[in-house]
Each structure stands twice: as structure tokens, then as C-alpha cells.
Figure (cartoon, rainbow, N blue to C red):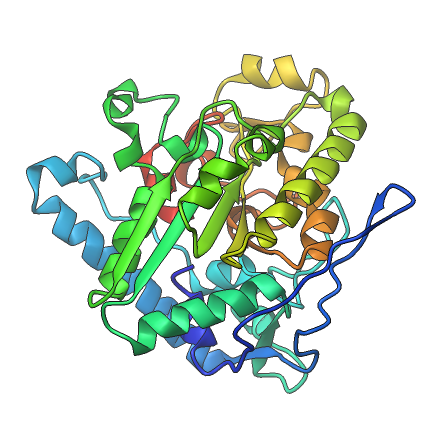
Length: 365
């Protein structure tokens, strides 16, 4: 989210987009974006992308440094050692580019080799974001923040316990978990980025909830008058190894319904699917409970995970596509290929089971 605004600044978009959702033979139908511009593209040059990535990390660092000067705020950051940042390559991989779109559940078609590859398109120096209605809406809303002081932006976060800030390993942080959670971090980052405007992130995530939960709470979300809606359910979309076929169908169906209804709110919000994963950290027994005989580990043998924990983003792909919803994928940023997890997956990128510690929340934001 921090990287996208300036990418979109010069992007000409329509101010509204009408979507007519229909059903045929009990099958959900794709979005009929009859009023959207079909010739729009989001093309970003390599040099501009690197500047934007640097600006993003400068914003993150400034917020953290300010927090460490306040005794209370410092509790919600790790004051020991340097702050972890995502590289430019990782930030770009997290976006829905035309280069990393894939139906392959193994992720082997995702190109994550080098920043040069990620930034290379037709002319060898650019990359292009997918032309999605949710990104077009986001462009309009963020451009107003860029151009008009004292503008208001409301971001609503729905999801399970991970966005609430609950952590598995350091229970001290659970005394006030919302302050370490990625929605609170995102609010601080965006307020740093847009000091003249009012940016508010409202976190209504509830532990244990999934798409079905939020289908029953749409009135609550609509009453908050959202400009942007972040949907996180990847952690609670997990299942045991032998339940993947059943679970993938459930996730696709319920995600379609939820994203469809959110995109049709009268406020025309920009809906973004926040895509994550989970691990068992160093707990072999936890992994064995969910994928007996299929446990995987990173090359340092200190991090265990089940193969299906990488997949909810892929299960939801058609639901996002047909509703023209963008994603912000922490999974693709740090672990783009399922069979090749980073060696420091558990020590740096997901230090917990379903609920990582505070450093990871800053990276997700």
C-alpha cells in the first residue's frame, strides 16, 4: 500500500466504475466492467520503481525511529537490533503484476530471481500492474491524498486473529495486541506519508473468523464508510493436508461472495486481499498434527511447515480475478515459490505459528 500511491499518481482513471454481477446456471459470473477503460495500463519504469521502494522504506524507518523515542510506543517495536526491511524486488513481487500472475499452485512459474527480471517488460525497463478495478479505485482515492490537504481516507481491516496482533511466542505482547498489529503499523506509515490529511485505519478483525463470518457482518463494515477495505483470511483458510480439495472449493466460493459484495458497496471501496501463509516455526509436533508424513522444512532444518499452508492465495485466485480485486501478497514478497522457501523463513519472515511476532507485522504493513 505504501508503494502504490506514487506509482498511481500520474495514472488517469475514471472516477467511478459500474459493476453488474450476475449468475448463470448457479455459477458466479465475471465482473462486467462496462464503464471501465479497457486501454488503461499501470506501467512503471525501473528507476522510478527503485525510488518508490526507497521512499517506502524511508517512511517505515522514520516511523520506527520516532516510536523508539516514546517509552510507550517503543513497546510495540523491537528496539533491539536493526529493523528488517523488504527489498525493492520483494515489494514489487507483492503486487499483482503481469509478470507474476500464475495459476500454478506450486508457484514455480513466479519469476522471483532478480529485480532486473521483475522490472523487465516489453521494452526491458518497465513492469506493469494488472488492470484491476480495485486498483483503479485506489488510484482515485490516493491521488486525492496527494493533491488535497485535509482530505480524509478511511481504511477498514477485516479478518481473523492475525490482524488483531495476537502472537504465539511472546505473550507479553498480547496485553495490547492491536498496537503491534499490521493495521496499526499501516496507519502510522500512511500518516507519515500524508501528514496534511486524515488517514484512519479501523481494525475490526476478530479471532477465528473467515469469509463466512464477514458475510454475516457486512452491515458493520458498510457503516464504517470505508474508502479501502483490506481483507485478511489466509491464516484461517488453512486446513489439514487431506482436506485440501474440500477447503479450496470453500475458500474460492466464499471469497467470491465476500469480495463481490464488498466491491458493490455504495462507497465503491478499493478492496485489497491481504495474502499471507503460516508455519509451525520450530514446533515439529504442530506440523505433524496438520500434515503427517508431508512435513517440509527449510534448508537450515529449524523451520517446519505443511505444503497446504502456502496455498490459500492460490485457492482465492479466481475469486479475485472475476471480481477485479487486487492483492497485497506478503507470501509472494518473501516466499514466491512454494518448493523454495527462504532459509530465514522462520527467523525473519514468520517467527510464529499462525501468529508471528511484532517484526513481521511491520513487514506486512
